[in-house]
Image (tube, rainbow, N blue to C red):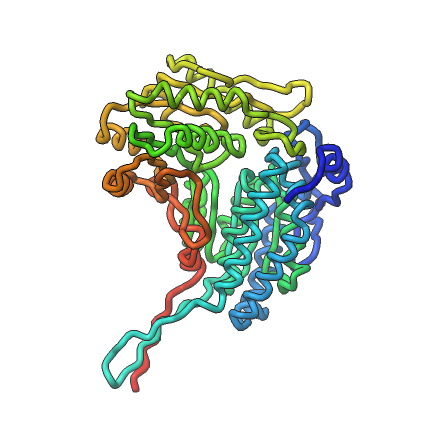
Length: 496
């Protein structure tokens, strides 16, 4: 539990020793001296200036990772030993949990209670889970003729480039790094330029935990320069990316233009949340719908941004969501009482406000919110918005907004609900509320989504994979299946 007052957290935030340099080969690296400002969305103030990677710094990080893989001990350690170091990383993340949570809140605007209880919990659990899995992986020996022996082995792929966004900076980095390290790979992490500080601290923690130099490197910079350099680098064997579909296309092109590295993509979403009249608890369905779209300021690829409600209960459910939006406490991310913090920055806030304006222009009805708030703070705050009378062809219903903006659509029968749910280029997640077991199975099968939640939303643990269909990407994070992204299958046939 985070046991601190707002005033205590403000004081501790001012005392943080925030990193400013790349983490390469187990130590800080200033690079060529170029830097960029990290702006806190809570008040619009500069936190620090951080080293800005160019191709030379990316080359340095990749060379370090390559040495650590080709000649270093990491790929050759017993899996149990790799696991022990991952467990030690988890322990140190737990020890430094408040510091890291404060850093996440400062750099991307997440409420401190969520940063501490959810973001850090996820990162710690991920390293611990893969640390425990590391020596549980097995190879295969299929039955063959008596005069031969066949072996199917999994070998670490090599150097992994990981590019992650700002909305869950430690969770999503951990989902890439932990399975890659468990498999025996080395990693170059490029965090978003909006949230580089927690990633740099993660690099320090990993080194302090005993990770050999070069096994995890962190370079900070923007996508068009540092991200592009990593995506095109011939020394990178695998690229794992979470972010927008548009940027995902760039990484596929980078791979085609360089060494045909494998590219794993976890991209955008426009997730439907279907509420049927026989939902076991309509009040819970409405509360969960509100929580899902407003949690993390709506800055989630899985956010249930399309609420599909049967027409017979549409007004009842919509009014409950609107009531929750009205009472939601928007405020300083460092205040433990805050329920929704700041959007990541003014540029992103402006894009979300454009979607609100477009929704009104297209004829949707704004039931609540949608305007800036707390303007005297200098931060990027928005009142959560709910639109109804949304037509499936409107941009509100088609485009990922990545903010606390909910679109309500209605349907009259189950077939129409499924058609509406699948009427999107994305296929990341979906929700369904029903008491009928047969309906739950049939609709779950019909929905084109990598994850379907029934009578809940955003539930699960590390045992299940996460990823999307269609233009929401390929490959899977989480679970033992994530190891597949960072290993090569080798067949060895021995004639006896």
